Image (tube, rainbow, N blue to C red; front, side, top):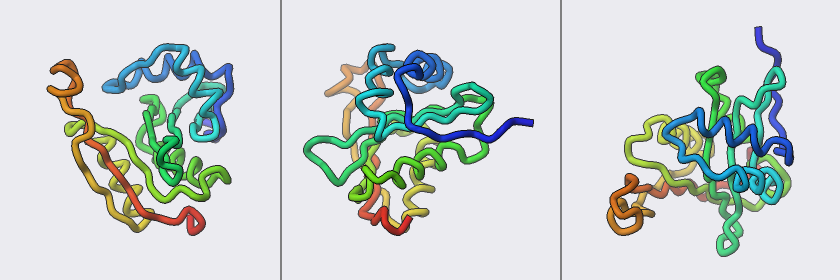
Length: 166
């Protein structure tokens, strides 16, 4: 039996653990370990680490775009195979939204490839939980932006909603 999963803000010492977790979660694109260290420090207020039995089993990276102060952009959602199927990703998203520094967030944005059924299910479920809509549009085009080296990334925009009612 597993112990309770603890959700918390990430710390510097989580950077390399995040790096390893993301590599174990295809189709996520791995970032540099330095990027993961910055996520765990500079962006810790909008990221969440999920730990169980001293193992990092989940991580969500996010940030508030400077030109969209009422928006939380979710960069990546990583859940280890051992922690899938219990709603951990949803719990992590809700934990970030419940933080004081996100009280004025009215929209969530993320990009998802068309074939990533798990991510579409997660964000569709979140939009229903928040009683709002999810809009889709092309954000990074396979040909124009990725030069045919990556599938197009669709922007999923959820909102508006009021975090005070969460």
